[in-house]
Amino acid sequence: MTNKPQVLFLSHGGGPSPLLGDEGHKEMVACLKKIADHIPTPSAILIISAHWEENVATITSAARPALLYDYSGFPEESYTIQYACPGDPGLANQLHEIFEKKGVASRLDDQRDFDHGVFVPLKIMYPDADIPCVQVSLVSGLDPAEHLRIGEILQDLAHENLLVIGSGFSFHNMNAFFTPVTSESEAMNVSFESWLVETCSNPDIEEAERAQRLTQWHQAPFADFCHPREEHLLPLHVCYGLTRTHCSDFFELRILGRKSSMYYWSAEQFSIFPTN
Image 1 (cartoon, one colour):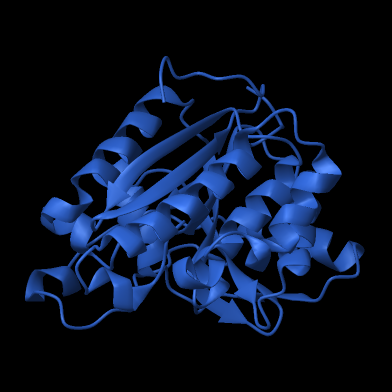
Image 2 (cartoon, helix red, strand yellow; image 1 turned 135 degrees about the horizontal axis):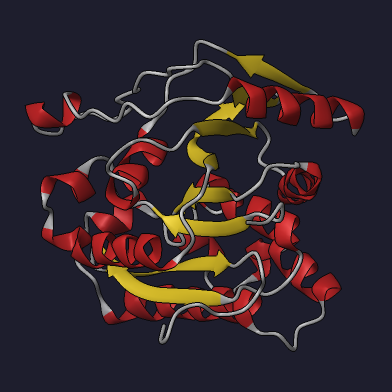
């Protein structure tokens, strides 16, 4: 057991499709199951989802949050998915107090339900829904430096065996998902992913440079093609702000036909996977 959290940035796919047996999400589902099988089972989960933005950092504080089916156009069964994990008001209040102590505006929200950026990956990783979970919003304006700072603040959390998850998507161009892959789009996708893997995993990069690369991520090759809007990348910034080091493991895969990636920082900061 440790007070230092393990940290995971995951690519959560398209809506509820990973739970519906969609062929384009098979690698993603397998990857998340592999991660859950290998890492220590957490006592609680703190998750930052790309699908919640507020004017200030906002924290779910209900004891039993329901689910928010924040998608449309999917089969009827996707609106009856259940994931009845408990909330953790104590963890939520501790985090709120830390934000206030650091002079960062925040608030508790006991009405917010868990969106699909929370319940879809957690249902794959921890199907028993028995691990308490708290969700934290992104902050409107989507400033990369601000989200690095939010991650830094999470360093002050004192919670044994906590898992912090940034739930986003390393590639998130909605138009591209609905058009055929071309040699040009593949090259742009691969170039950005290569930059992202290098940025997050290379131990030879100084941390000041790594932080600068993430803060100025728009300068990465084909960044605006891979992320026309940055909300699905910023959960990664929170993860890095918390860890301030290279990841211990990374995973390259295809989701919906596009190259994507996930990143894991172990609490002890060494690899716990035999291969990537």
